[in-house]
Amino acid sequence: MLIDSALAVWVILGLAAWPGATAWAASDAEITDAHAEVREGVLYLDVRMNITLDQEMIEAMRNAIPIHLTLSARIEAPRDWLYPRVIVSDDRRFRLEYHALSKTWLLTDDLEHEARSFSTLQGALRSLERIRAWPVASARRIETPDRLIGRVRLTLDIDKLPLPLRFPALFDSRWALNSPWFLWSVPHGAKDAP
Image (cartoon, rainbow, N blue to C red; front, side, top):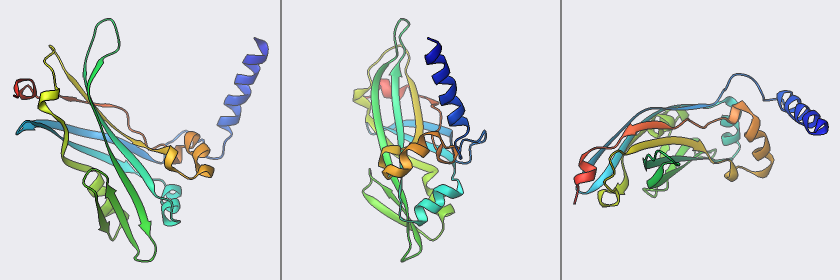
């Protein structure tokens, strides 16, 4: 037991001494607003975010390493005695990269199967920070429990980084591009849709 405690202390001290393990998070993602509505039997979600990228992440993209982001939406039915029951789960994936030859930033949306080109990183981030009319689910998939809760968050897909960057990205605040879950209200019209 004493050996386990000593090992835990050494691991914590080692992580605290890691070069990028600072108390402040240089990269950051925050969901500021989410609004859902049902149109023509489909539940659409609009999301607004604030995204800040650290200089190390920007330099990685300038050196041909794309950043993969996932926007996840969940609709859950709370239960008193167990974890909430997930009714709808949908992910929307994005790839942000820099093309040195054309000196442009590309934002690829896997849902729409299109890549948009921007002359500045700020332009690409502004486009990513406002997601409009995301078709999360058919309104028929949403059952009629008493109460539904919607959640949305943005995460960095660390598994798609090159292997030498994966371990530092787990502990380095410069790569901490994961927002907490943001709650949004599921419209009542979703329950009544045909």
